[in-house]
Length: 167
Image (cartoon, rainbow, N blue to C red; front, side):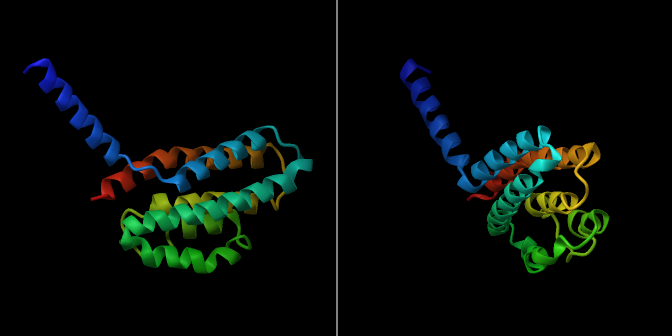
């Protein structure tokens, strides 16, 4: 192979790889908000609960966008995500344990394979909204931080799943 052939081959590989990894602005926005909320939660005092709640609600709304994006590439999740959408307004009235079991673990959802990642971006912030109704202490902070770290970690996995679903 000469230098021209190697250069051409490298160019083709670069083009193929860049078209494979599609950018999803919903994911970028979600991750940015989650990272900001993580930082705010780490340094929050009980007087900051209203601000944390407002930003967490924003993250839930962005999570719905991510869940819908995930569903567009994973139609087997449609029924499961419809339950989450329909019940979103009442999720906060549950205990953390009940909401975790029903929505996180999926025990109250229609069975569907491979849907956890999409719903997790909504469920984890909702769990934090439930926690914010409690007295804000170190235990609540630690649980909120763990959930935020998890959703941030999921963003890359969701990106990979979406990229693999692209024709």
